[in-house]
Image 1 (cartoon, rainbow, N blue to C red):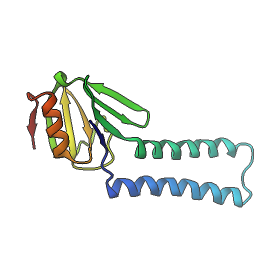
Image 2 (image 1 turned 45 degrees about the horizontal axis):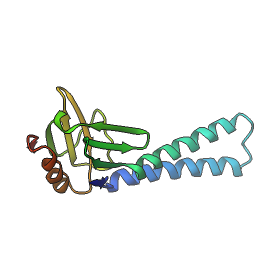
Image 3 (image 1 turned 60 degrees about the horizontal axis):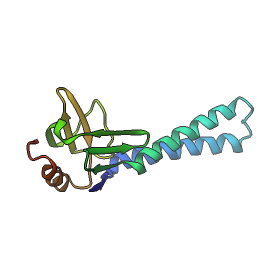
Image 4 (image 1 turned 90 degrees about the vertical axis):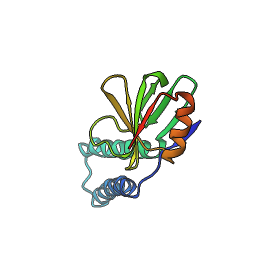
Amino acid sequence: MKFRSRKDTLFGSLIIGVVLLILFLMVFDILSGGVDSIDYFAVIMALGVAFFLLWMYFSTRYELATEGLVYQCGPMRGKISYDRIREIVKGKTLWVGLKPATARKGLIVKFDRFDEIYISPDTNESFIEKILEKNPNIKISE
């Protein structure tokens, strides 16, 4: 089963704001005639950052596949088998660590001994319901 990432207004406005700022500064610099051969590198880097941010924002998704939880957020991809997941904390936000998510108040998936990942599926409840069908031994906490 596939889940899209929930899009938080704060996160979305930050991403779109940064991309628009980058594009505005590039267009302003080009129109003012201040672009020389050295600035082309900066333009390419700025376009790369804007592309990377939009790629992460629009491609974040999760899948409960037969082999485990599969996540993707731009170039970040991974898979966690169901038997490695020991606990899911719902309604919290992880501020440090791996966060392929685009919203706050998602799920912290704890696996192995000390590893954890933060995700933000469309609905936390339906995601938890479906993952418990795959492994009913997962502890759910708030």
